[in-house]
Image (cartoon, rainbow, N blue to C red):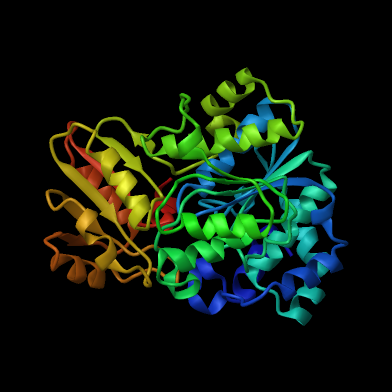
Amino acid sequence: MTYQDTLNWMFSQLPMYQRQGKTAFKKDLSNTLKLAKHLDNPQHTFKSVHVAGTNGKGSTSHMIASILQEAGYKVGLYTSPHLKDFRERIRVNGKPVSKGFVINFIKENKLFFEANQLSFFEMTVGMAFDYFSKQNVDIAVVEVGMGGRLDSTNILSPEVSVITNIGLDHTQFLGNTLELIASEKGGIIKSNTPVVIGETQKQTKPIFDGLAKEKSSKIIYADKVVARTYKSDMVGTYQIKNIKTAYQTVEELREIGYSISNDNIRQGFLNVVSNTGLLGRWQTLNKNPKVVCDTGHNREGLLYVMTQLKQESFNKLHIVFGVVKDKDLNSIADLLPTQAIYYFCKPDIPRGKDAEELRNELEKHGILGEVYNSVDEAYKSALKAASNNDFIFVGGSTFVVAEII
């Protein structure tokens, strides 16, 4: 199989949450444990930092990896979803896994995957851990896919666990209150392993404190203990919380013997994009008119993005906007500026929400615009309509951003 054949097989083999939604969710870790055993338990051969949370877990993971790279460690980085190419999910020192490795891993294990009906996500986590083991990484920064307790990544015994924050996202799987979601994400807290919480929230603090006590684990709330902030190439005021969370995680690693200087930390924050290849976080795509895209897609993520948008100066605001079918538009509609021209589009995946439906639902909230046949058409129309002093924002879904980046 070629690289593209391999990906096509992986994507079509079994439901994948990112593209299809609820049917891809597994209810326990037995498949992952079976796969790990089949691969000779690669997760036991490298150290790790495990990062969960509703928002900011991707950015925080990249920041931690960047700092560790600056300190001279060989660093694995596992994140999801990808924007342009599957291989973005699995990196060592910022370099994506080779096409050859992806092809061979699937080829060698295909019969096992088929016999055990493994999901896309389970296969991918197995591939990442196998790759990190074979690459002899010093440490891997591993982002949770969804939730925590039942996530395929939760077979790690990390040096530090990290939970950035808790918001109402993926409620159909994780529960519809912050407390229930915190219990799921808190499932990554391990015995006698420090856990860094990014944001202190009244509803979730008792849950995390209880889980940490149960596991005899030290718990640190980064927003309460980190007074300073660092400059970063990750622009956007919303990154300040992630910077504090990443900093505190690195402090915990220093405490257990990792050699990371203050200069490594400074340089790590300044070079996240070049060290790790991160895309799509308040990323400027054009200057005149200014075009920015951001992958924020749930209430908290969009709140950060819209706060950032208010700090921009422009004549007219154009918004290229698309979402996935299971998006609760009522939970985000009040955040979207009504004084903007909208270009509604459907991301090109099965889970994409029909642009006509999107327009009709948002119209009730005073959010008006035209419907376009594709993300590309919507984006080109916005570029054509905007003058140099206008501002174009592209977002609503990771998959909308992926199509124009």
